[in-house]
Length: 74
Image 1: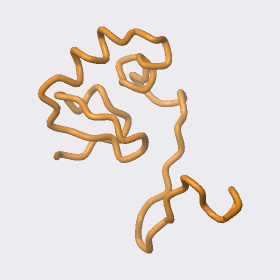
Image 2 (image 1 turned 180 degrees about the horizontal axis):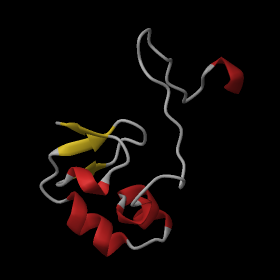
Image 3 (image 1 turned 180 degrees about the vertical axis):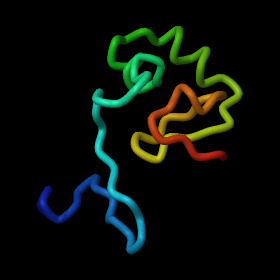
């Protein structure tokens, strides 16, 4: 299987919105993806503890939706 055939890639399902990671949205500095990119893992751990939401873009989980780009209730 080639990389183009989807090795490690999720298939887009009918009716699902396509998302892209981007720093170009409000309050991104509060999101786990940004904090993790800064390698501030102590903060990442604290924000993820007792997670109630998951990001539909990157799959990270957080206790509060404000810490995710596109949160969905778990």
